[in-house]
Length: 329
Image (tube, rainbow, N blue to C red):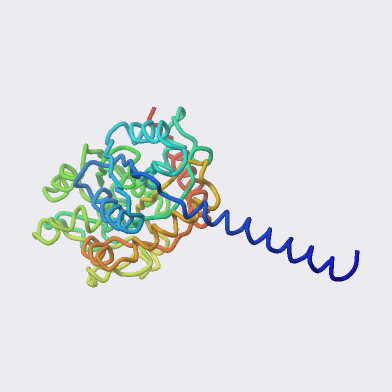
């Protein structure tokens, strides 16, 4: 074979390689070809539902296909997951899950009807919300340090509420107890409304709260935010100190987040293409303005980094849940 023949073969090989690469990209971009469903375990009107509908509207414009939010609340998220697992495996059915579903449930349920690593392809975190420590307006606790000192002086007497057993509010209380060597009484409620009314009435001493869920009661003067369990202050509440500001509470950080997942079968090019489209949806000015009002963040977490976060938080919450002997089944 002469030099000219070898060069011709090399050009043919490079052309074939390029065609394969373009073919893979085209297959990733050839989506969607019909309406897309976004399953969610959250009820219509909730904060996660509101964020999902904002994203769905942007995706519908981008994809030029209807993107329908399908609310399947109840059953610890199992109802929504069951519907999702019966759907299309090509990415036309996606699901919104929160941090509890994918990082805490594997430790709180012995018989979980899904496997996070086996059944889901992480796409993109669509919201994260830090938590405030909320007390009633008439509470004697002016800061988180006051609450911690009271809990040490009266073990088991200071109470905190959450919106259900195993919720981020419950786990965040367990985290504070573990980090500060405290013993407090946990009181679960059925929903946010009951919980924050109880805190406002001082039926329980404190609870973790997001700006979206408890902000109206704080603005009405019925609740006070005494700390933000985060590295820095919230621009919407600049007068509320972050826990990182005090050596005694530094390291106590707790937030909740929600993300979109696809079926495991789309892992790879389609997974990354859909995730990129979700990132574009989150960057839309309308979404950014709404998130600012709700106090939500939209971290830049592509699939690989989201997967790494899930693994880290699963290990973190697993230790806390094991220490607390918390089981939900």
